[in-house]
Length: 274
Ligand code: PAF
Image 1 (tube, rainbow, N blue to C red):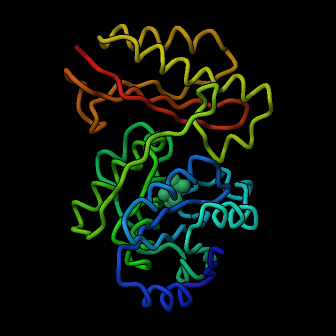
Image 2: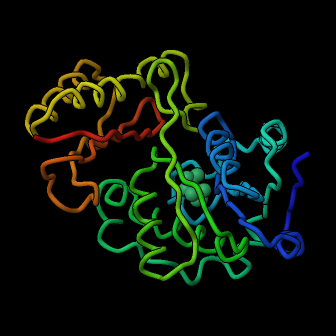
Image 3: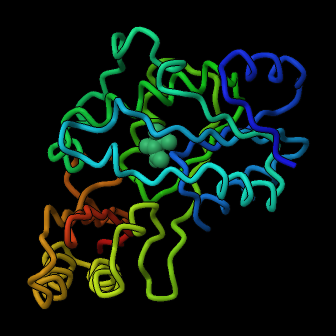
């Protein structure tokens, strides 16, 4: 049975009883197979104690975004985590996490101002602040993040390097539906028809992945996106893996963000340039 910790106090008490590796899987809940794959990866670390945090972090949502609508399904999440054998769920309240409201925050630097950062200017400061707090509170030795949020993963690795944090960051591959749609808690907002439409993002990325020059990668991906006028494209971008430099020969990233109905979705793949 997964043990639920509702407060920082309870977390600290339990944390003090563990000496070996402690692996944190940070989430906002509404867990799906993608999250459970992160837990399974965590369990592969020998003698690991696995803590899954479930916290819908108000700091990373801007005015008018889906903070209130974000699915909160703690009971079902705990059942899923019990089934996979996670040791702890840490599910604090916003008041426990931010007793003073938002005050000290972490600035993400240049890689936080492009792509998602250009569309959601306060988002990554909110993400890095809560992730830093979760690292400090759990005193974790390792933390696992999915590659679906590629820019988030990159910025967290940068934060760990730049602020000399003692946490090993492990990247986990994207988990996709049979249709290719990347699993995301926000997929719950989609109707059956929108879910079908949303697979266009994956089809566009997959078409780009078949190509090996900058022009042909972008052209093939755009060609697929243009077949669906109901998809509102925010960006389709081919970037160096560091997201701020121009792409170079070898592995780069093709990233997409688009709105389907009212739901904003993101996805990305590795592409190889000749
Ligand atoms: O990826 C997410 O679910 C969130 O951004 C994270 C890392 C749990 C921080 O709130």
